[in-house]
Length: 290
Length: 308
Image (cartoon, rainbow over all chains, first blue to last red; front, top):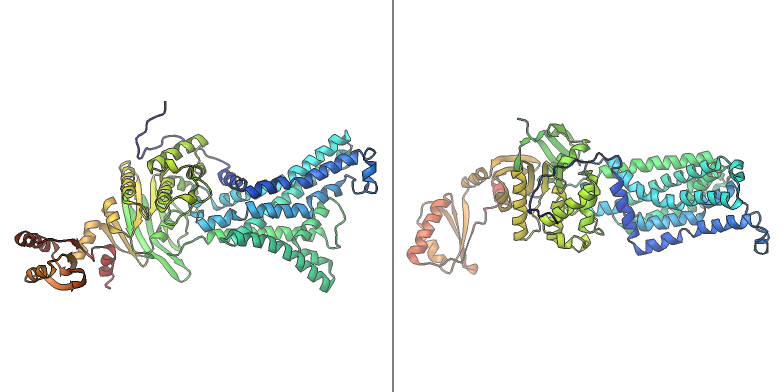
């Protein structure tokens, strides 16, 4: 039988939990809100197409004899080695899908809180600004991880399963670590990138414009810089360029340009630190002058 | 006894703009109202005591603990901001449950408390509707619900009765009083004197970031007696009323509003005025449509206090 309670104030006498993951309700809400967008669900499903095609590629590479009629001349492409995983994790299409998904599901992460002035409600709770940021970051990490780390590990496992031996693992024992580290780097980078963009405006549409504009303008800037100076270091101006350079370093593949991948790695780290600093500043500036 | 909220030399600037200046006050258990016109510094003070703003100078302590960066203390604090602060896509239930989870309640407890809080502010029927479809009054009630749902020791309510219909206002006032009766501390800001009077007699007047006066609400009323009260009477017999009352020595000034059939009296002695008015109405059988006090509001008190 339902308890009959008198309307009005009742003192609560239960025990509050000292939670370690205080940010989790924020992350959970962010993920839930993203999935409530119909277009997001469709795009999310589509974003797994590259992973599926790579999985098919692994399968075919293990059955080249059976697929000779259709794989003729593509034997090199179908070689599954560190470059194969590097190519998946630094695929332009993957980066584009991440941007697209996060534009739909992540643009409003901080922007909406600014617009609805919800930050003051969060910060009036027993959470710190860092908890708030970690909660928001969790949303981006979740989706970027689903598009990078998870498929890459599944592809690795599929390779072992389809080949029927641990030979591949023994040939490249460091590869799984590279997959994890590079995926984590992508998660951190895109988290900083999306949250920074989201903190720059209260308008979700402007944030979406910033997300795409900054990404593709950096690539245009690299092209212009390279056309003028013919310098390999022009790659440092490009967001996808830097990520691909770092991927080459992590997967021990020859980088696309002569510039050291360490410099690109440094550029990514500096960008992340700067983003964190700027986002913190934006959060501190949430003050209403009345 | 240590006060629940102690502010010492509290000052806050926004660049060159002064928010509050050298505020020293102790707030004890019960309901205390912060009064002041828009821009007086009420919200700044509330943001400081809820740890959202760092004071430029001075310190504020709640329950003996410093507020700034003391996020564990916020478990004992409930804050209802003046501005709407919602995730419009969530429904009332999800919004409240999420905030309760941030306070450390389990999922089951959060949901139970959410249901209770929504029922208390009579929003249970709309609990599954997106907040974007809520009316202004519903939004206000939801904001209040989120402030008390986690059972805080101290409630900070910034303009809590804004946008509420009279029935909801009465209901929220009753709830705030229940909270007081349970031994809690409540700080309410408002610029509407009758609302404050319905809640408490303990008030703090803030203007230009400084405390102008503090004490019982009747003390503030007394301040009005040092200035002439304005009493506006609307009646078809307004000219006769003016003639009959003009002979009284406590009437300082009479202004006519013939287009509205009204007359405005100025007097230092409101009680004498109303006693005589009653006598005259009975003696002459006069009908009155409306009696108002144009300067019986907070703004008028402020005007007097700041010497406008």
